[in-house]
Image 1 (cartoon, helix red, strand yellow):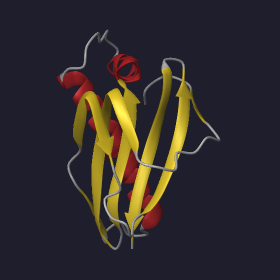
Image 2 (cartoon, rainbow, N blue to C red):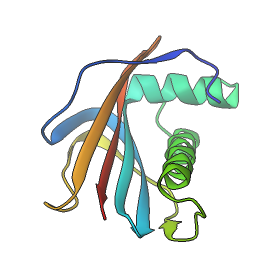
Image 3 (cartoon, helix red, strand yellow):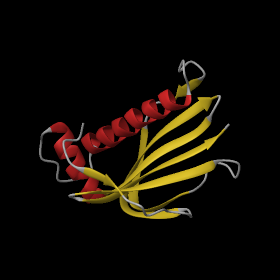
Length: 135
């Protein structure tokens, strides 16, 4: 969908992370499984992804970037829902949202949540996708 090559890395992120000059797209899951899926991108990566996704030049974090990164989180959340549920009726997704800023911390939603983080490499830089789930 973003028209760029993306490679999963073997690196893992084990502790909560502070994000600097970044944007995070979030989608909540509720039902049989509850939790959150987040895609964390440095601003430069998010602008490049949005440019490729929308086919237009993006030079600042704006509503287009927020919408694009939120939509990516929504698409990934839909894929997670399909994987976790045969019928898809026992898991509901929230509307996507985004947070961004000079520096912010993203912590576990719950101590009971299992956390999986996958790091990715793309031409504009690295980003990671985080899934926190409890059943």
